[in-house]
Image 1 (tube, helix red, strand yellow):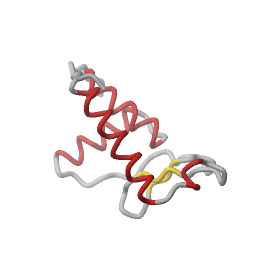
Image 2: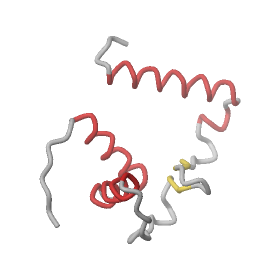
Image 3: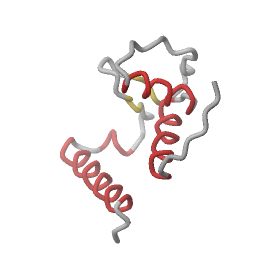
Length: 101
């Protein structure tokens, strides 16, 4: 069924980003979110991501991004990776709040 909704721009951007990262359509992702919000049982995903995809879903349902053998992250320690993640999250929060970086 087709439905039209007015949703905040930042919400739509986040949904589109997650759909790309997970290799899914926006339609399938939004349907899953609605099922979760309504407490409904999830249905099987209709399309599997190609084996060559850099993103896979881990055992706990979280996305895991695989990298190539020579990716910069392979040469970083845990502390450096965590600091990079925190910096990135802070920048994203400031952008969402429309505050200067």
